Image (cartoon, rainbow, N blue to C red; front, side):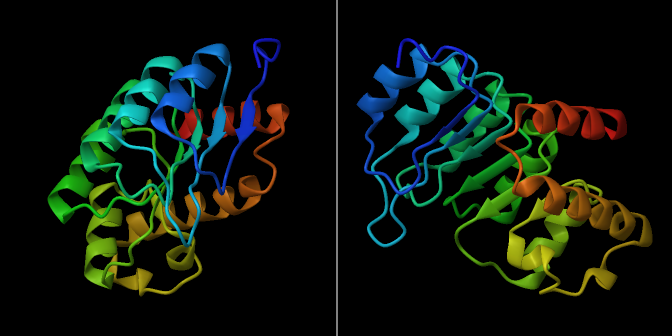
Length: 193
């Protein structure tokens, strides 16, 4: 790993990694932009807020992070990552925040976040309130992006912004490993924000 200092994408999804593994691995990879660490869907994962501390300290330039299925990670762990990784645009997580905490995460802690996925499904009102509070900047969960709620309940301006983000994220989602696309992605969203 020490020879991979220029690595920008690391996919360790469906893993059984522990916090100590992150402490050894991540300091050796200073250029990571995409870090995929989802635990096992059925059995969960072992990462905790301690891993969030390591991620936020060693990967400040992250743009995409998947820490889904690690149910021991709390809202405070996610908040630390969002605070210390200002370039983060996409976050997959298993936290189940209260509406107040979610609005705080998305509005003040993560002003550049564009996509926020949570494992637990909430009711339509929860999602609509979050989207409205970010002015349509944040796309929540892909099943929501696919039209599983009534977007017409949002203001017209928020609807327009939300649909623009949704379209751009659909295009980017499958090519995020491409470094050129990452740079274009930064350019596209940097101009609007």
